[in-house]
Amino acid sequence: MKKSITYKKAGVDINKADRLIRDIKGLVRTTAVKGVVGGIGGFGGLFDPKLTGIKDPLLVASTDGVGTKLKVAQLAGRHDTVGIDLVAMCVNDIVCSGARPAFFLDYFASGKLEGKVWKDVVKGVVKGCRAAGCALLGGETAELPGMYKKGEYDLAGFAVGLVDRKKVIDGKKIKAGDAVLGLASSGLHSNGYSLVRKVVPASQLKKKSGMFLEPTAIYAKPVMGLSGKIKIKGIANITGGGFYDNIPRVLPAGLRAVIRKGSWDIPEVFGALTRRSGLGEKELYRTFNMGIGMVLVVSPKDAVKARAILSKEHGLKSWVIGLVAGGKKGAELV
Image (cartoon, rainbow, N blue to C red; front, side, top):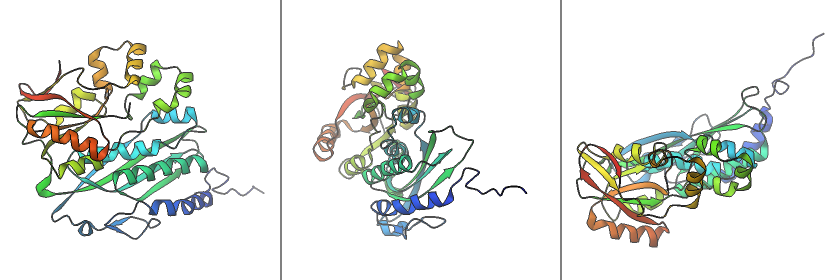
């Protein structure tokens, strides 16, 4: 007689996943915002845009992951920050349209569900959602034996924001002479880690995991607070592609951004990577954020006021790092 086989014996423990989700529900509820209808646990999360008070709302959506930064987290055995990265990588993109983050969903996949690891990741997601001012509306936890090695997992995130149709930030009003305002990054954020892992030995990544796992800065509240006080003409999230690929995305044809090197503070982690990698300047500024996590384009007369608001009200450093000039669309470092 053949032995009976169950889903659990095949590697998927549904009951364990259900218990973990029940345990975390209270924490998830702390992210609730205006617009959330009901709680997690259904087949889909409900959100009512009318409850947000926005007169003519447009939805802005983004999806992203944390990339191979997860390899560093798994190497170091530290999983409480990558959830923040996951939220940041999504909400920072929708902020570029002037949208206020409304809700977030996460996807966690592993070969075998380890309760503490999963809870640490979700706690980071909750922390990120609270920093962004959005609700964790739902998600998916998948146990996929055979897909991932022991101790490995992957993450994906999905964010939706709302912006009044009349307040969309699209870069169309940018003109020559406008100031380029750079907002301080918290470090590497979540880009360039395949290169980082290539040039930094695993022993150093583990020893200095605090530096390499510093979570991505979340700019939603500072930018939303600033947009109510000055006119922001364009916003670029400095992610993969760095300065050269991201800043031109918000510029109209016939305009370029001229960025002045040395006009902002560059965190030590970038200096260390420069020395270890031997990369040229172009490659560095196309791979990493080099200390600038987001760029705002504003009128020159608003730049000083914007810096003061960001510093005093949000504790965020910023610098005027360049200006917009006529010429072929692109970014130039001088």
